[in-house]
Image (cartoon, rainbow, N blue to C red):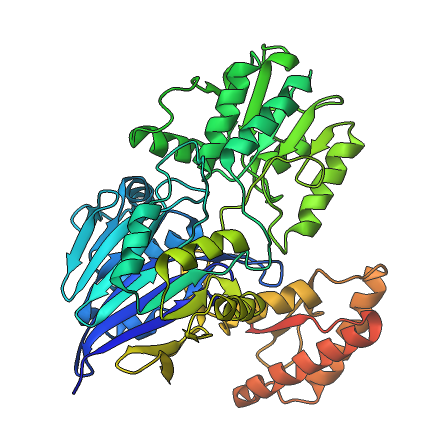
Amino acid sequence: MKEELLFCPLGGAGEIGMNMNLFAYGRPDNQKWIIVDIGVTFADDTVPGVDLIYPDPGFIVDRRHDLLGIVLTHAHEDHIGAIAHIWPKLKCKIYATPFTAVLISEKFKEKKIDINEYLKVVELNSILKLEPFKIEFITLTHSILEPNGLKIETPVGSILHTGDWKCDPDPLIGGNINSKRLKEIGDEGVLTMICDSTNVFSSGRAGSELDVRKSMLKIMERLQKRIIITSFASNVARMETALYCAEKTGRQIALAGRSMHRIYKAARQCGYLQDVIEPLDARDVKNISREKIVYLCTGSQGEPMGAMTRISNFTHPDIFVERGDAVIFSSKIIPGNEKKLYKLHNQLVKEGVEVISEDTEFIHVSGHPNREDLKDMYDWIRPKSVIPVHGEQRHMLEHINFAKEMQVPYPLKVENGDIVRIYPGKKPEVYDKAPSSKLYVDGSISVEEDAQSIKERKNLSSNGFLEATILITPKGNIHNKPLLTLRGLPIYEKEEFIDSLEEEIEKTTRTFSLINKSQESNLIDALKITCRKFTKERVGKRPYTNINLVRI
């Protein structure tokens, strides 16, 4: 049997977010595996009560005894957010550069898991040997500190896994993209490049953080009242820009939001943000005049619990906004967040607050490669094949077309669960399918997509709740009237509704012999049908219905 080199995405292929990639090398009966990234995506309103979703790791859990470790490219939640949920099923080594390692440690501390024995810090631009893999970390630029591409070298050839990246000539904080090494890797030969597809529809270049800083400074110089900047907490370069511009405009700055404080602390711990002004505690700046303060806060996507939403609702304990102030949304509107974000914009405008966003000013650049950036990477690497990831179906198809324009011989479109044989063979091909699905973090428990708790909560959110408790005497009669509880039903004449429903319940109950306990389950089913049918006829809803039979 020949050695094989395999690639299998469990998340992030056909979607933006929830990245989880598997690589394997060896004979089919003796393959060693690594995981690259282990991320989450965020649930929307269609899944009430759920915040996080991550890939089902069952396929690799079954192979955990042949798993060499988890290798992380960078610290964005869609690349590390699931690690504390999945790792307890794997108990393997974790490899990350210093900034990512600090944030990983915090995640495990929250879960009360001691990860020190397993978490291994890898220096920037260094090589990690996990036989038969030799993994080289290559510094790239992105919208977070320490983004890495990975050269995954095996006895039969190399893969370049780009992770998330862009070409930023002036990233402001952290290293420049290591284009010299990328060119050398291209010269050495790359079997397959697995590449970010997020901005494949965007022409030109993604832009530089330095250009954002210049624009931000001009904007802040003209603003005379209180300034609130909201951005992604993970963008440390943007954080440094806010600190820099505050100092240049003679203002103090305060941070707001848990993740903003956490990222600031992690960056400082790793030696970044050393030559900027110290942010103040938001509780200590209330006596500073409006024109002398800047706040940098979370909630740039209109998150209900983000600091920006609480400020706009006047429920934040320390920060107040009023007519004449300005709010700068220094971030991209993530698709799907438009509704809640524009609601937030409108709320602020109604209060007389100036709203500055990417719609009106140049205050944000993406962390992902536009087409000119992609051209640079293709020119450097010159891969024999390309597998697009980190994109929806439409992004990945366009990326395939782009790869063909760049004269790549064998581009391949995949989806989650596809097992791709990169070697042996002239070109990569999908030859098998791994089980792939999603797990929902429901409270503190991970459940499957079709879990009963999810189905019930969807039903409750759409149709409301009805509960009937029926007391049964020893002689098999109903004691008094049924006790009814209604929630989430559009009922205006409540007394009349309850009286009529009680009559229907009693009619149905009389058709059963209550002395016979074996009839109870049939009665419960009949009462559920009665209650749902009655409510549907009256108010157009079929509520989630619970029936209690209590013998007294």
